[in-house]
Image 1 (cartoon, one colour):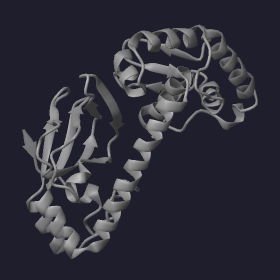
Image 2 (cartoon, one colour; image 1 turned 30 degrees about the vertical axis):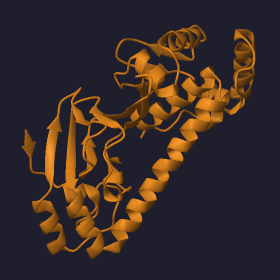
Image 3 (cartoon, one colour; image 1 turned 90 degrees about the vertical axis):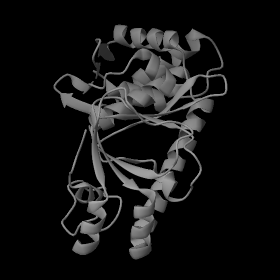
Image 4 (cartoon, one colour; image 1 turned 45 degrees about the vertical axis):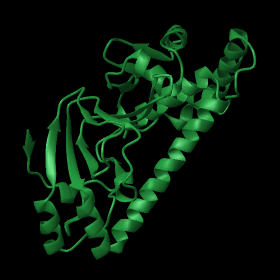
Length: 273
């Protein structure tokens, strides 16, 4: 199931330059790198496999080398809330470094993945030997907390249209491929999962996507969504206020966003990650 791979090179722990510019930690010496690599494992994970669950021990930190990982939690009334979709190069399970409490969320392979894992004791030993690693992990945790705080503010303050628009733009930036007709989000995501990402029912998501398809803002099929006019979605997000009326208020806001987008075309579509 598992194969050896250059986990430390992906993490930026070796003296050779990392392939990805957003390395989590700085370079270590060759000897330290070899010691860490000897206790690191790389695992092929099939789509749908749970990497960890709430209540599991926080004893490893992970790096996603390929594929997509879904981070989610379960509410007291047994509803799933999707916190994030992770992209190759992302680190997750990082709270294992600072807290031995059991996991409070789940990580699942949303596509076939290659995941690299390092034990908690190993990374703590590396931090003692190279304090810069601890500084990078602290910044990573701070960034993750700010991201989740922004998500909470979005759920509380933005309209349903704006929440879906924002989610699609973020997915396009991280998982999109640009072509002559817009940006294709090839992530195999159901409308139910999009709803769980933005705190809406599948029926609401379906109605809004159908509206935007009629407006030629996007195209949909079973495997992908193509954003034909991302500037209109971007303008809609900027006009967002919490819904205080019925559908007419939302359509009015979308009309205002469309007018604003006419002057924003020069900005172009979001740049895929």
